[in-house]
Image 1 (tube, rainbow, N blue to C red):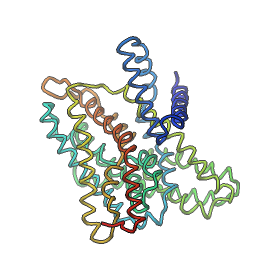
Image 2: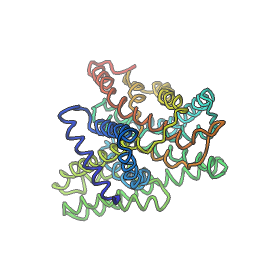
Image 3: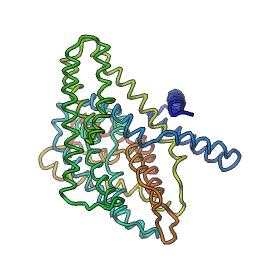
Image 4: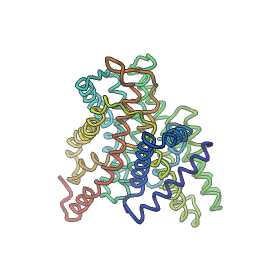
Length: 429
């Protein structure tokens, strides 16, 4: 089948699971889709190993027609981040700017180092010696919280505003610093490049700062064009040009398309919405992007669940896979709790802030896409029994599934406690 036909069928599967979820499981839609796709993957694996081997082979061949990394990083990511930026309340974001900045810049670095050190020790215990540079690579790809997963699950639960804006703002911006760290370590690990302060600073400036500046220019140009017409349909169509042509141009220029989409989305959602749109199109803006966001999220989370068919499992690596989940959670906790020690010197916070930011730091498709970019052929262990790409992909997939299904399903009581504490007048620690 062509890629287009494959995506059409996958979209229909995702929508069907979402429809059935309304009457059976009745849980958050993206969680239900991921869980349903995971069950389908397990069923295909069982049938493929027992009575119907052709089914598994055909399913794998069909999924391989869709390049997951390219589909996400070069395709729908722009739409999802732009839609997320549209929903950000800029005044609330400004009130938390220092907290978000520290969590984005410092938190990712802390988590990367904690996860890398823990993985290096675990690999030694598991008798799969793992060079520290590869441990850093895994720490860099798994530490940034995924804005798509966070916005799709946590945002809809109605957390207290102070907590919600921190976790939303952090997840939307930290992929920039996370990507810079990942690309730097990737270049050292596989390209033989030397990581110097100057090279890292140049990469960060070009990717992150360049993406923010480009997004601001794109948002300004879009604002002027939208303000120049009163045609409601044309105004909505112009917003589509931002995550399509704008996202493509950002990637061509080598700046962060993800950060550009967030900045442009915030500008359109907080400025153009009130001064540039006609009354009619202003009403339809949120409805249009909410529908598109729901559709693309459904497709993405289905692919995450089905990605199990593409992961090569090695029994020797299971100890690292199982220990990787608490290790990443520990790294996340340290990266949040340490900054909060400083935060509390200047402001009061909800007593559940650290716990919600830790448990709500979800991972998703972005981590999988980065894991899939690791080259094949690098053997680990004394007998070369495990391949580096397979090991990192196994660990990443297990953490992503745990994050979406377990953390996503169990964070609701924590958020409810935070809301109850704030309502009772005891919101601070």
